Image (cartoon, rainbow, N blue to C red):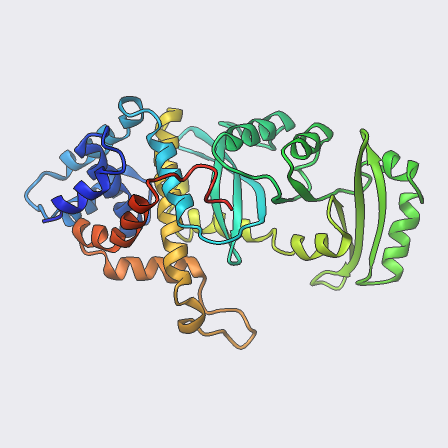
Length: 371
């Protein structure tokens, strides 16, 4: 039996009930094997995981629903699950990406404003804020996301990448205070007055960029007493039409261009969390504490898939003729987990090296695993 394995995990948090430890690990295993967050569908895998086929599946459904109340009985449970996810990310990490994903489901609205890190070329979520609304986030939302993340994570010296909606003077100021560099895409005309007050007219700069396709044009400028750099690069899109990439950054122009090319990785991450992975859009939870807890489990499952996939991805997954790999790191890792997860005991045995590592580190994960 797996009782001794659960006892080892419980050493990390002796104050937790044994049932809390077991059911939390069960939920991670279920998300990995059933590839959904729909509770009604998850219940079908409980018998297989626990090796008990005589129990009414409706009882398993009630078991999952009771587990979702654990955040009230065991405050901070979701935080500890996030810390466990962070502990899997070993080595230097210096790029972060911000983006959001929103949808309506079953009469409910979900919007996850998400902060991810770029880990060995893969976007991995580390923090999020549930906005409960459609549309873009505000500067206030982003600052709230940052303040809450900084309570747990050491983000100083990191570089944040973001698309056009993640601009704003107060938002930039908050990043500066936190010691975070930025590379954010701009829309046409953004901060034109500040840019032109520091040098050439914006139209002239863009004209220069378009006349030198692929060459970097840049100009420093001051915005609310802080120094930034405008970076412009003209290029042709897939249809052959000329476009201009506009960035605001605190990095050198060359580094800003190089970093920003990785921003799209978070879009692949959302795809894997939703339609191509864990079916996050099947979420049917109303209360914030339940959403946080289930989302933390999804993040841990996703991170386990990524880190397991990276162990042999370059050796085992071959590129196609056009150069891209035949599958993503996430799909490779998830397929490997599913091939080896027959039941909860098997899952715990696969986690054994991680449990040993957590015990060795005395589970001091905060402020150390986004190095």
